[in-house]
Length: 287
Length: 256
Image 1 (cartoon, chains in turn green, orange):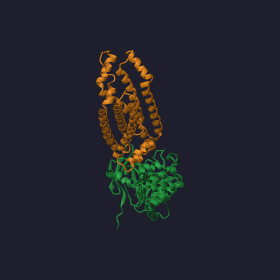
Image 2 (cartoon, rainbow over the protein chains, first blue to last red):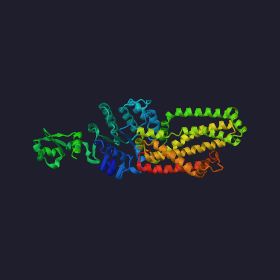
Image 3 (cartoon, rainbow over the protein chains, first blue to last red):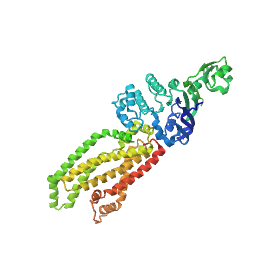
Image 4 (cartoon, rainbow over the protein chains, first blue to last red):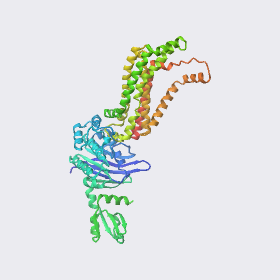
């Protein structure tokens, strides 16, 4: 059987800012997959992405991108990484043409034709200063840049936040198209779980600088469930199955980590599949 | 790396109009001054003061040179506002993008230095044309002396530029006023320390009323003839600034 290659590998990575600590973070992104990196604002997603890109220095641990230690060859590795941040980052007076001139003198594999094709496809005027673009257009411009140097890995930090559902859907289709190529992979950070549910193969869930959950998205969704019961029935539920629970005047909702085992043990209780958003909320509320 | 220099020059595009206006203004004023000093009122005033023994021939020549030096320095100083680039990068959030580009910190920092030297190169080119015109119209300063002043000025300003880069990397985005202040203060302090003997003499003359022979125009001769010393100082300061900035930027990341 062919061994699965990882495009990103983090082992026990830590970064301490004093008021925030990324604590022993370990996860990997298999080649050809879309990895959804979820967590609430301030959970440590951006710090982790900055560490992967070697924009900031880690305190300890190991980070490999394309199998290479990131701190040794970060500049060369970035030739194959397309990056999209939550804010555009280009100077507002710059036009698509300016950005093309700049980037073709930076990336060895810059494809001018592809860049202008993307601008056309995304309906972005090449001669208009990007400061006059809407938020959706700015994100598309970043994606056009990220895709125009034949990157094999896209690293995106909240690219869909603040966008309307139509633009978000359009962007997700672009990401889907990108991963049609088997050696293309995506690390997509977001707190909009609905987007990740549509596109992600893998899920990494971070909170308070710690990884709470990681693995195959379908397996995570398959395993977790919401058990609905009366408050009085709550003590009957095995503690080993409970991730966390919420009580209300109508009863209790319990996130369980093995839906099928729970169904066997408690056939009279209602157990529903849990969407990613609810899984995230219950894990965060676990404290 | 070339891409970053191009981006920096794009950032200065807005300043191009001001720069062009300053250059045209300096050209016109310098020509008017030179012509007046040779044929017009300035020449007449100089002759009158010589007749009345208010000034010596050397004084008249030095005053003329002093004005010409000012004209030569203006185009150079017009390219000085490189903090615009740092601000523009910070405001746009470009620093984060730059950190994700396939460029090492060393290359990103080196690009910044090259941008500054390219700007001074533009200033030197303009000044060379001005020096050719002025030296052909007047005997107040030779072409060599004028170019000595230009090179000295470029070297002094590049010391300032190297210090700006260092303080910018050290203090980070949004501290541009402090960067300018510290860079000016450091440059002036270094110049004062190098001329401490001369400054003590001036102090003695002004405040202790001692009768010491002061060479008032010594600095002008220095700029005209000792440009190589200033150039060496600029190279040393730039090298030190580059080394320290690289060390800090490597530790902090994402600042340049």
